[in-house]
Image (cartoon, rainbow, N blue to C red):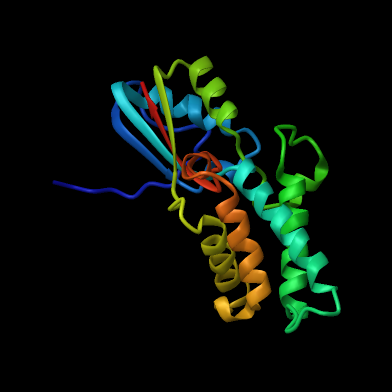
Amino acid sequence: MSCAIVQMNAEQIVLRNDQMDLVVGGSILHHLFTPEKTLRECYRVLKPGGSAVFFEPFELGNQMLALIFKQLIRMNGRIFLRPRLGRDVVAFFEALCLDYRVRKGIDKSDPVYQHMDDKWLFTRGYFETTARSIGFRKVTIDSLHDPKDMFLNQVKTLLRLGLGKDGSALPEWAVALIRDSDEHFSKEMRAELLIEGCILLEK
């Protein structure tokens, strides 16, 4: 058995038609201006019955996080709440809100995207419509998050990755507000509030 590592343009895959059984993309599509080109290329190189799997961020769950961040920032200004969120945490939440706002929607023609690494927050509808128009026979989308405490766990993950801070950066009142957001929805609804999802496309 041999293995070769090849770097190529995901929008122009240098492989023959109907050659691959499986294509896997980990956090790739949301960096592209036109991810449908890559999906079309994946369809082309897959054998009939082959599958493409992608792991990508979704608008619904991330915009819910933005609403949580905005509420945390508003609450942080109330004089009776102690301790407060650190200035760096507030600035980080504000930056995330801006990032999520810019990345929503499918129009990526604004010049701002030329300077952005992450360009997309996807919707279920985007993948279902695009994949079916290309010819994929089945589209399955599942959450990558445990529905229990999904927002709280994601906020803690973002703080760790973005600021190197653990959950102790969140005062009790902030944790309570995020938990309330988690508990506001049914377990079934939280499974649909995708923050990050696994997209399975079957040819």
